[in-house]
Image (tube, rainbow, N blue to C red; front, side, top):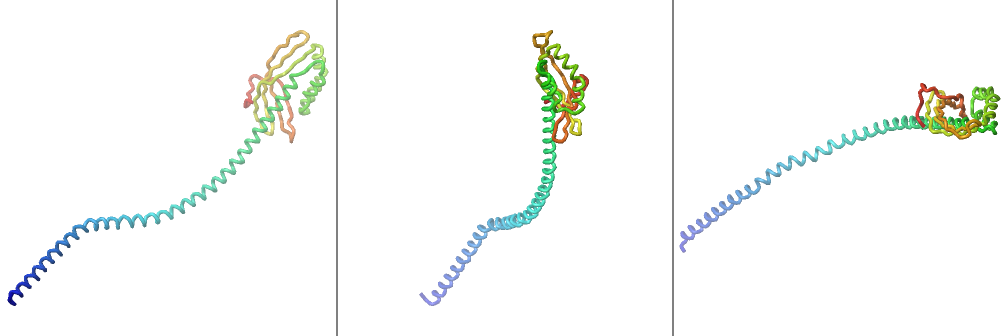
Length: 230
């Protein structure tokens, strides 16, 4: 091959190589650009969303935690005050109910003693109706004792009482009105077969220091209101 031909051949080879290199470069660049176009958009989308979330959460969490703690502290104080007041109300209510129950029991026991007697043992009867009473009520029995004893002896009265139910009404100043429904089975010289008679009685029970006293006792007026049933 001559020198001119050799030179021409080399020029053609270099041109062809440059053309191929240029074509490959353009083709490759186009391919890379095409392949990276979508990831670039996704990366931009991620770069916008992710930082917003990562920055927003801490910024909002601290104030919320602080407010929650403050609210909890206030609620704790309020609940503490309410518990203290409720506890006091509960104890007052419990003590009041205990007093009502005690007044009802005193009235029931006294009613049984007053409705149960035997002409052969009148001292036991009078001791029962005078025990646990105020001075005024005790004096009333003292005044009628002889008369009542004669009537019971002459009639040969025997009686047994039974309490069916009761109701209590607080009157204030540690005094309670107790209505007692009871029955009394009686027999006497004229009625030898026992007969049961209903009785509706009203007692006034007063708390005096550590003692409970019956201050009044008698039949209930049908127009008089009662208290809570027991």
